[in-house]
Structure formats: C-alpha cells, structure tokens
Image (cartoon, rainbow, N blue to C red):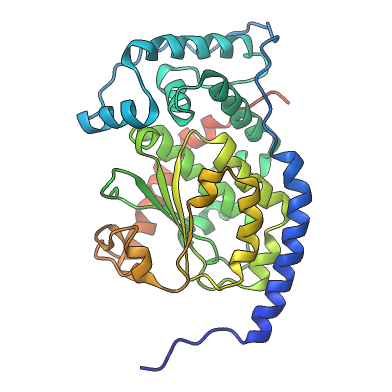
Length: 337
C-alpha cells in the first residue's frame, strides 16, 4: 500500500505564513475583547419575566447526581437558594436581558460555573449579549433556509448518538467539509450553534458531564483558513469559553497538518490554563483519537463501529427540521442592545 499523499511543501509553507499573520492579527483583537463583563448589580429595573415554572426536582441518575456533587459542588440543600438568587438578579436585569428564567435553565449555568453566583451572572450576561451582538449566528435560524439546509446536508456539526464511557457528549465538527468558494463560515457557525443550543436544552446530563469535541480538518485549505477572520476566531473562542453553560472536557483535532499548531498557540494564550491544556492534536493518527473516544461510538468513517456518517447526518437533519418552531421561538432570548 502506498503512503498517504499530502499537499506539496510549498503549499504548506504558504498557508503557514498566512496563519502566522492571522495569529498576530487575532492577538491584538482578542486580548481586549475577551475581558469578561461583570454583572451590573446596580441595575434596579424590574420588568416582566417568563411565566412561573415548576420548581426544579432532581431526576438525575444516581451516578450523575454524585458527579454533580463531587465535580461541580452541587449541594441539594443550597441549590434552590442559589437558583432563586440568580432568578432575582435576572428580574432586575429583565429590561436588558430577555433570558430564560426557569429553574433548569438557570441551574445549567450554575453548574457550568461550579455554583459561583457572580461567575454565573457574568456568563449569563455574556451569553445573552452575544446572541444580540452576533445576529449572523443567532438570527434567521430557520432550518428551512437554504444556507442552513446546505450545512445540515453536509453534516458540519454532528453530536454522536451515544455518550462516551464517562457520560460525556461527543460532538464531531467537520470544519473543512464545506467549499469556501461557495459557503459562508458564518452559516457553518450558525448551524453548529443551533444544534449546540438544542442539545443543551434537551439533555440535562450535558450540564453535569460536559462535552468532548472532535474537530476534523480533512481537506483544509488556504481558502478555509482565510475564512477564519480575527472577528470569527474571537467569537468562536468567546462563545465556548465565556458564554455557553457547557464545560469542554477536550478538543481533539484530527487530520491536522503540522501548521495548525501555529494558530492554536494563539488561541491558547487567551484561554484559561485548564482549557488550553485540553487541546489535543492527533495529526493523522486515528488510533490516537481512539484512546480518547472509543471506536464503539464513532461512525465507520472514523474507524468506528457505530453506523455510517450519512446515517448520522440524516438523523440530525431530521431532528433540526422537527424542531423548526423551537429554533424560531428561541431567537427572542437575547440582550436588548
């Protein structure tokens, strides 16, 4: 069997130089942008909130409940008090933040911040501000739109149907499957975030165990790299690290050329030390990935035994269409900017 071929060295060198220039540009933009905005405790405006929902009753399996206690510091005796404190803060902020205020939605953010109330309020503010400030990702989220249909058909973002052996949700991000001459990077992020929102909303276990990401760079080109402008890079980092109530347990880059580390090193500078350590680059070594994610839950195309990629793509396209009304209704939750 002949060895796998890779792009000529001159192409790699040209792309690496472009990525180094991009990295320097990102550094100047992200340093200021990623400073978190603290909660404004002096905002005393009280406005109408969502209808009162039933109080949270824990129905987690025993192992998940114990994990929440041990890893997140969840205390059943204090949980309700913290939920109420954050809800009261959201009521004071209601003229500015049109937020979900039901117990479970608030609890997911508390878990994402290990029950630090101030950090939770900061993350909530960041989350709803981003939804207002980035309309290219968070508006016109109808899955019937042609640009969203294109992304769903290609399978740019695919949550696996089985969790890993630690109970974590694994997501497959096919970052270079689209044609940069035809498709917009913002449409890829819009569709991905639609599915992130849906899985976080529907699966409480994600708020306990977190997410493992596989980023497949197969077919990456200069065109793909040039789509990743400093603005888009900043928004992607900010969303995952500072906005979503989801703990990223690891980010695994596969089919990754050596020059990918040039940009990743820039990202690491603006991540928390814990997050930066969770970036793993496997190159072209699928066996290395299998040490992190069992082949038993991966599609056949990734050396796994869990069905084919086309089946997973079809599943999530069907789910997205079934949830069309939910996606459209969710657009109202954002800051009033």
